[in-house]
Amino acid sequence: MKWVIIEELLSGMVLVKLVANTAELPVYGVGAELDNSMIDRLQQLRLNAVYVTGDARDTTEITLVELEAELERRFRQVLQDPLQALIFRHIRDHLQATYGIQE
Image 1 (spheres, one colour):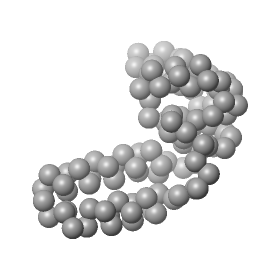
Image 2 (cartoon, helix red, strand yellow):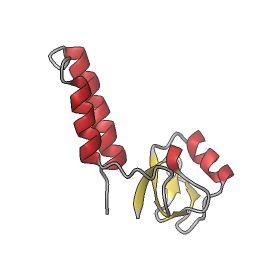
Image 3 (cartoon, helix red, strand yellow):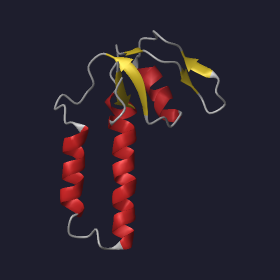
């Protein structure tokens, strides 16, 4: 089971958790095999990511630790600025929410 961001989904991946809309109504059930129209629908729902089986589009397999290290390197010289520090924290939180969930 992988937590995959919507932009990296591929046709043929299979949902391993129910996908619901903002009203908590089911949109796609467990075991649904994704096709391009379903992926478009998930993007319209403005979901960040879903749980699937199958290979994601990004084969570089960059880990969360590597992503956070790169983020810290890029912000190192500007973190003393409160606005830049806020941006850094929000990006880091997004990375952790998107890539950090593993079961």
